[in-house]
Length: 295
Image (cartoon, rainbow, N blue to C red):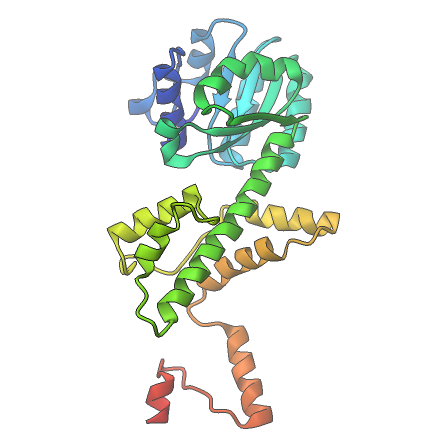
């Protein structure tokens, strides 16, 4: 296992709990079993299976480039980061030239995967997937593994998975805000908690939301600012390329962009236009509320 961060460490522990011997390497010496990638490869019996669990982009690419010079025919690399599926297709071709298999693995489960298992979506040739199957079976809960298709399919399906996740989270968030705004004194945390049982909107995300509300019912310790990992953008880009309408996922992605604005320039334009055509009041930039202006 290359990369022993939150995901890689949890996956390593779960593999070991299922009787799999794992050699771990990380740039942080205190977490590593070996001192280098060279030592990692030397410690593994052939045919080797090396799982790279690093952030997408340069860290993953640099590691894969190094492994291409270290691995031999019959070895297999499993790349489990949130990489772009087009990169995965190119990487599979590059490894194939040296006789090394490449499997792109979409991994879902987060920090809970150690105990609950990791849902795995993999892409690659049948023989390469079969070589990694004992490890996939150890990591995934029953029914939580799929050989989604050819190279690139694992990361493509994970990309779509994350786009759907955006939409689900946005729907829960909007429902929460509407109930909080209603003049009915609704116990919103208790309502969400009840939805976990028998409701058609129950899900693991809902359970996690209830966990968050139990810890901080007013969410007072949380800033309303949401990052995106990039996969939501890729999902929307692929939808545009394929002319497939994704209104919910696209809106959820744009909502995250909106969360990062202290003040929207677009809304300033709209306020100015409303003033121009209708004489509607413009609130001063100092942050006065509507009630302040009315007074």
